[in-house]
Image 1 (tube, rainbow, N blue to C red):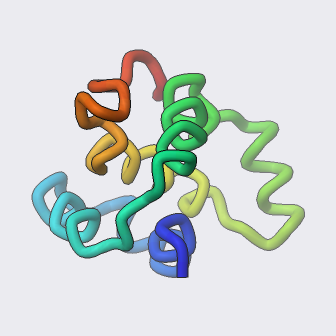
Image 2 (spheres, rainbow, N blue to C red):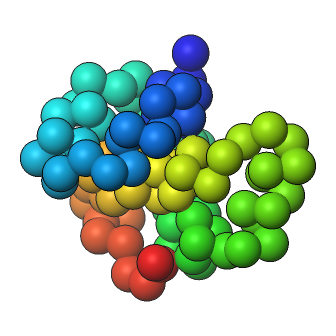
Length: 93
C-alpha cells in the first residue's frame, strides 16, 4: 500500500488530528519515494489540496474531499520537506 492510500483510507480522522498526532501518523506511514515527493510537493505547493475543481473530480471518482486535503497535509510533515527533497514548501493552502 502506498503512502497516499495510507492516508486516504482514514482521511476523515486524519485531516482533523492535532499536528502532533498527525506527525506521528506520518512517521508510521510508508516512506514516499523521491518521485512521489516531487509529485506531492508540486501538488501541495500549487494548492491542489484545496482546489474545488480537483475535489469535484475526485468526488466523481469516489474520493472524498478530506482524502484530497490530507495528502497535502501529509506532504508538509513528511520527508518530502527534507533538504534533500527541496526543503520547506512555500505556498499552498
